[in-house]
Length: 200
Image (cartoon, rainbow, N blue to C red; front, side, top):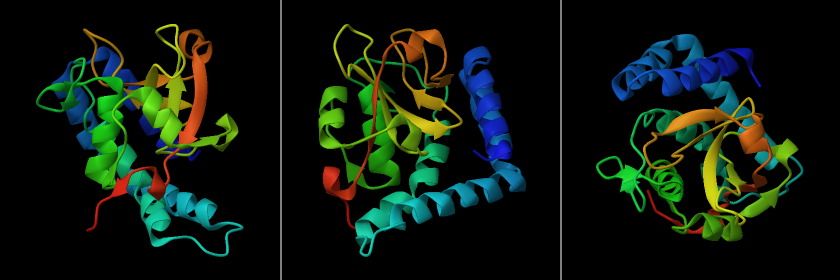
């Protein structure tokens, strides 16, 4: 992971835990206006696209589009830091639950409509090894004593963004902390055939 992007993710995570929603949004705004960050995000976008096409003789236009927008999806998701959790919520107006957040980010950024529930999202996406995780991939956890009961979006540097639980807000967390590492259920990659890819 690029050290500049890693630093931004660490700072964003700190802001999401310690600051009120307005401050978190202001922090992300400052990060995004830093030209160096924008340049680094473009590098991530290029790397993701190259990995998708490696070893493949033919890649669909939809796959290129999903790969190209992976970094856009991460940046968009960061813009929702501080939005409150709400069970069944799937918009900034209502708040988000975990799967509603993932669904909204993919629909708004990639134009891809995913299933509504976390376990359905796991079933509809491509299983990948944890070592293959790239920004924009999905990470699943067992938080309710059942598999795939929680989902977030991988942002890089072993961190993910998600809407965690009632009383909490959208935030970035480290997958390496004991709570999350002990509940990790698997990683998935969203492909164009996962859902309906909206025409642009």
